[in-house]
Image (cartoon, rainbow, N blue to C red; front, side, top):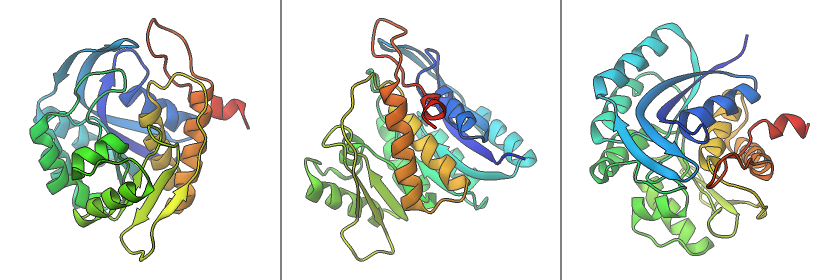
Length: 262
């Protein structure tokens, strides 16, 4: 029987990011994906036109339905939209002992605010201490810490500040910098682990969601964090290389590329 995995986030009507990207990633990796939707976006390759946040009790009903039935091997959060949803998710998960990946989604790659400003504090206070790992890009790391990430030293500074907020580990993604990710864990006394990558051509809509979904999947499958991070980076890179021009804007990555490359 496949492992069951949970994603908590927003729906992308264009099918490129959010819940849709997560479910595709889980399926490619042989996992059964479940979801709790926090918001519905009117979104395509050109950007986010509208965001309709769901009521927190609707999110809670989905979470209860899932955890009442399934044994969840790992979970991830993406777009949480509001402070009320953040606290609802945190309160539901805090006693579940489910390994949690927090992808602190603030803005869509194609443009559009996805997290209310007041929800950022709730994310730090209530959700981050529950996480096995936080996966910010350099802009999200800056929003969380007010550290301008421009190189490895500033990435390490931001990562340590995030650890001080209660996270057990953080991966500062370097896709907007030098394509080198930085993994730092709270129980290490070193300067972190560099996870190298290379810049490849392709459309990048949904690559962040795909990476965090793959990371969650490999953790659910039993990989240690460093190995899961390396595997997820390979998965996301392949998806990016085989991205699709299916609209008039930034095309989505193709998670099925991982299967074709094996």
